[in-house]
Image 1 (cartoon, rainbow, N blue to C red):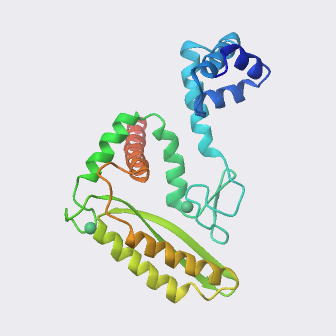
Image 2 (image 1 turned 120 degrees about the horizontal axis):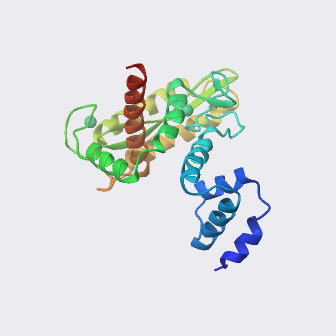
Image 3 (image 1 turned 90 degrees about the horizontal axis):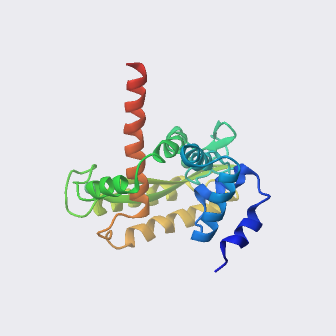
Length: 236
Ligand SMILES: [Zn+2]
Ligand SMILES: [Zn+2]
């Protein structure tokens, strides 16, 4: 374990923005955290000035582009029908909206997110209204091709085990019918998307604790509510 002095020396010539980014987003040791805290304080950033800048640095992470032809939110291919927004690329309006909601979500506490996720988990399935198994975020994969054009997606929905299996089965049929007709990506992606659906269908029923994906979905739902409330207040 390195002492605080080591980190003071290591970070002392870093730009303030880099220090803030590291402080806000990296998993730091106590010594590293204290060192950055002292360096920021020496530059006049402490107490009431620090928190808003940390929040801003956390939000800025969601504005980064991965620089590929894939969606910056979900990783699906976004080559032909991409939605471009402020240097980022998204596969759908929903992904753009979710990426922006993640910024709002930074203001919601992890405890609030966890309790909302547990509420979703123990509620009836939103698709069939049954309570036969725990409600969770489930994935399904699709691909379609037209000669030189192939698009593949990974989507999620919140539902029970049985609704998830039905959707995965439907997606296997979809891929088998529409996936192959592109060279070379149709031929490459179709088997892999079909297998991904089958793996989902064979996966065991969800754990009692909410998954990472469910926590993320809960966070987005809360963020959407917060965003709406703010918009109403702004218009009032
Ligand atoms: Zn996407
Ligand atoms: Zn269901």
